[in-house]
Length: 137
Image 1 (cartoon, rainbow, N blue to C red):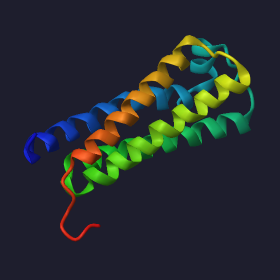
Image 2: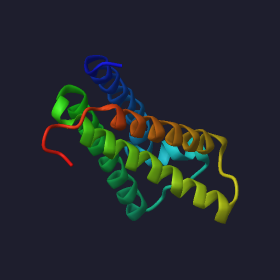
Image 3: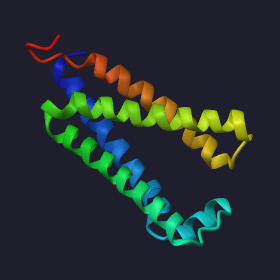
């Protein structure tokens, strides 16, 4: 695969990841008392829990921003792929730990874990496909 096609695939992948994360971010933070109750039967009834969930939404939107920046600016593609891999594998690792310690969650959370593992692996693969800038070790 040549550099141009790898760059196009990387950009498309980062945009895909960014778009995919937006509804999840919104479900956690826009109106968590409604969305999380509807999706997972979770009661969000304190200011502190709402605050934590909105902070998570902000973190997710921060990742979306990094990935969009990497999609449009070739010099940021490699850092965006690293952040994507770390974010996704980190989420999946936490979910796997929770399955081990707490048991099986809602089926949608299992789907999230599988997707996070797949996306993390793809991000690592695309990172390795990127040509390293001159001067990098």
